[in-house]
Length: 166
Picture 1 (cartoon, rainbow, N blue to C red):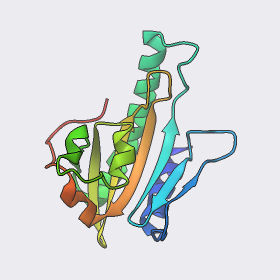
Picture 2: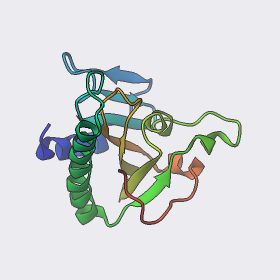
Picture 3: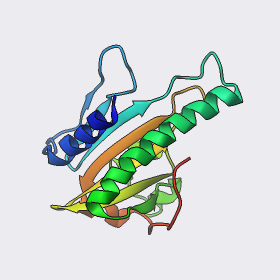
Picture 4: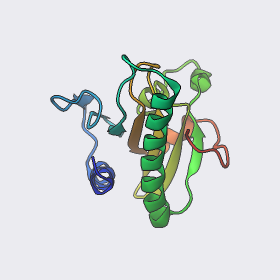
């Protein structure tokens, strides 16, 4: 997926209404890139996926994949920052469940892949986030985008300044 297509996908997620019930879309032939899940208050999409590491987990191969995804993150983050200002970095650590209630989507799903997300506030009661992560060492490194209702961020711990994924 090109940078222009990733940006168009973020814009589409931002404009798309939230469905009444949870839904998932997985593109044929590519189990990672293009995957999308949506729920009553959020959307999540895998914008870019590196190769997987089932056959080769050597340091050079993994580092090249991480650099590729980090570059895609930076390129898209630069455009989003020019639109909406600097993002806040929000911690997605497992202690989100400190109140004993389940973690809302998309933070729950994002937390399976990443420890933090960079969040922009475009208005209209929604936020846009980017995250970089990986489900397991054998799986691809992912660039993820999420859109959610502003109220969903009220459960998340306060942002940390200055940290960037990878």
